[in-house]
Length: 456
Image 1 (tube, helix red, strand yellow):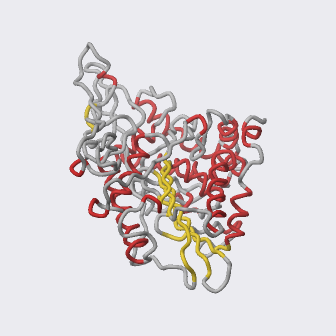
Image 2 (image 1 turned 30 degrees about the horizontal axis):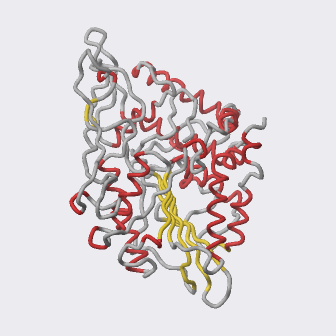
């Protein structure tokens, strides 16, 4: 995941609040995207069987689903944190010693299992516990609510692709699926929860195991891999030095200075958005300053909800700028997600050749930075280009015309057809010719990724 190095950004922010529309402000800037008041970061919308319609005169051939994990706890700790995070107890985690063979059955349906749980000991001077919040959640862990929202997504996918379209089998068949996740607890749990909704326990058969593929982090291509591609960060910093963005930076500096003062500015990557908005999503109190006498966060200077809202707006605008509108955006997207787009394109091409692709449905469990770069490469519209919320979901459907040999692509993002920005309407993604779509993907694939990543 990309980590922006501006004073207050973290790559995985958590926001779900009513935004302050930029058009209500006095100053019109050279580059100005409006954040609608309906924008919400805590929970993305999902497809709805009542509004979903199959492509007329065509048969569904293959589906790719790219998701962002669900709601999670903060990644960045703060000094003297008195917040309690006790929302990670729900039993939806991987069972590793299942004697019935299935790694995805709930605990009550298997014979023996080992289940991982987080334990945080009480504070005492003989441990490190005082530097972390209390509760039963690790940093950046998928919460019970995050699991539940992906169960809900799976249930809706079942209504559409099993019950409405009769595309997937009613009972789970592992041969129908390809499953891949980044190797992090929250993305793996999100995929498991989605499958639990798509195929509840009565529709599982004994002995059916679906492999969940993960790649070593060093070669991961489903999110920006700055460890082996340092040029991504170089280009991002160049984008944030552009005059259009510096105007924004100057305007929000008083706010970020204040947030830094209240939080004591102890975070290496200054994940102020992460710290504030995870609490907003859970309706928890926002941090206050530290009382110099008690050394607890009980001072009178507290961050306000409208300040958290404003930081969320700025974060979304930065996503649009870095991934779509800056002079560096195209190259950033190529290096960040081009290799994964190559994998998607290869899979689509195989599905277009009869009998060369065994599975019907591919699930890729990833991150906000994954979808942000994909949206940038697709030149998504302003409102859909904003920072991808929890549970963001992108469906790429391949359809074959019934009376010809032509193929169409449809892209749905958070339940709606993905709209292309008017400055480059390269295709109608409700019904895009497959060759045009693949040409677009190909244009973001570097010829030599490592060479491009290390060039200057």
